[in-house]
Image (tube, rainbow, N blue to C red; front, side, top):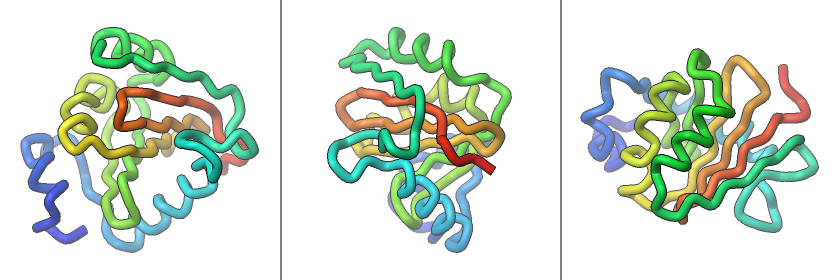
Length: 138
C-alpha cells in the first residue's frame, strides 16, 4: 500500500500493532472477502458463511467489545479489509480493544477474517456487526 494513503495516516498511531499488506496480498485479501460479502444487502453472504450472528450496538462500545471478545479468540491473526488496496493484519486481541478507533473515524464498512480459523466478520459503519464461519476454509 502507498505510504501516503489517507488511511495509513489516520491509523499511524497504531503502526506498531498493524502491518499493511502489499498490493498483491491486499488484492488476494479483497478477493477472498468478496466471496463472503452479500450481493443483496450490507453484510455476510448466507450462501458462503454459516452460523451468522448479528449485533446492532449503536453507540454502546462496551456492549460491542464484550460481544466481540466472547466470539473472537484473542490469539489469532486477522486481516482487516477496507478496499482492494487498504488491508492490514493485526491480532484479534488488538482489534477487539481498538475497533472503535479503527472503524468509527472513517465511517467505512470493513470485512475482517481470521488467517487461522474460518471466522469472518463484517463491520457496518452504523456500528453493526455480523460474524460467522466461512463454509469453505483452507
